[in-house]
Length: 316
Image (cartoon, rainbow, N blue to C red):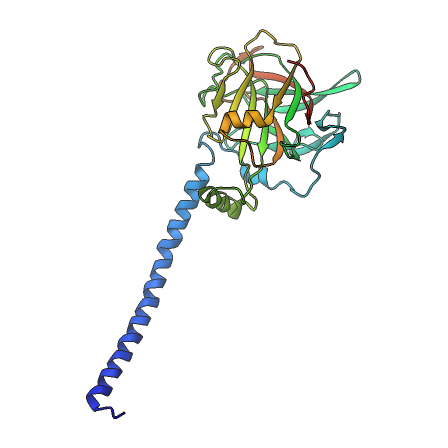
């Protein structure tokens, strides 16, 4: 083939144009990096902010960095698993702050003081006394089990007082003398695409996934709630509260509670859980209401004998 001068000039022009286009494309791609990074950062912080209210955020970094390879925290006894029958042994989780041995601290950002959980020995038994003086803190135990195998949970609790300004439907009234929560682990293989993105960003920042869903059993304060209510937490749509006791009629009395975890999860979230349970938490707080009790802003409650089982252990 014979190339004429004009043809060669044309080919050279095409090569130059392609080279210019390629260099321009690389420059344009580099320019896109900055807005893409900014956009990804904005999305991350929006997702992170949506995990909890700005008024009462869980300190995820402290909570989630617990060693997940430790014992599952369970003692098998026939057809039941003992979460805890408690002992006088304690462990320091913060400077001067002790919790029952094997339990962990979950604090809330902005909370100045922590609820104290103290083992109390009575005869041959040990239970936990929780005292909140305008304070809040959850203590929880890592306890991994399949709720389809062990669907029943039972425990004992006692409330010494109710909170006069308590209202489970609002943030300002969301305090309880006693409450117990079931924490469900996040399972990325079963999650929706949106949840995978959200939880992946949180894991990228904190190193582990956050909990997925929480069922919170509470002792209502008698005015705004009634026994049997199921309430969405004002802090998070993934937390549902079940009012098991309410008001002052059973104060100072130990109450035995037993619940079907599977049925409660379905009633709360519309389907049976696919996730495993990852832990059990107890929570006594009075930081929102500033309710007066014995001349102090105080809530006092007690907990004992937390057990999960394959069959119900108590009659209605």
